[in-house]
Image 1 (cartoon, one colour):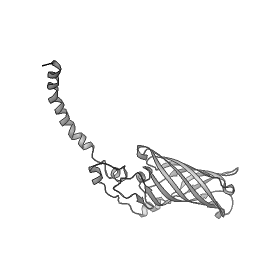
Image 2: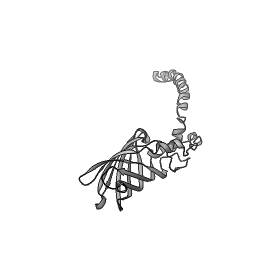
Image 3: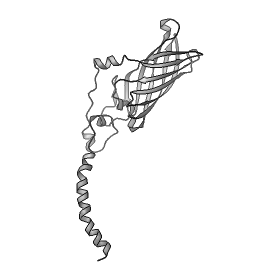
Image 4: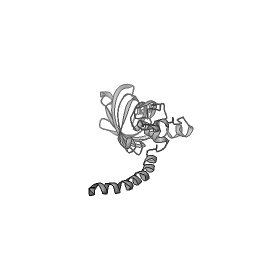
Length: 212
């Protein structure tokens, strides 16, 4: 019998033993990493789909209170710049990065992974700009559509957004376009919004802070 065949036969039991030892840990490693991943992850395969459960999402008083904390911003108009603050609300969101076994719809309360793994949302965004003039003229109201796309680690580490909105300020209507980038599970980000409408022309840089 050739020497190579004898060597292969001697190695076969050892390889079988290694495969048996590794089989258990590899199978265990294929299990879901907890409800968070199963809730908003990409559509899993096999038994992971069967274990998907809907997250317990509901409005609570603490959540409502932290939504009152605004994000700071810098408003830049024609030859002037002023500090401002912005609030954000999401009446409706559709996530296309969700596990297919779960509902992709959210209203008001949205988990970070559900939003930043890939989604499309309707948003409202009142702003207060500390500029001269009457109190009512310092407010800007925006309502529009924003899409989020994951860039790193399904959006947990890095994601981006593109959006457009209609705005109302100083008794005038206009349109605005925006782009944003986010990190730390979407809790911290930067948004740049530009308004090309002549009467409201401006650029706003917002330090987006989201509390979930």
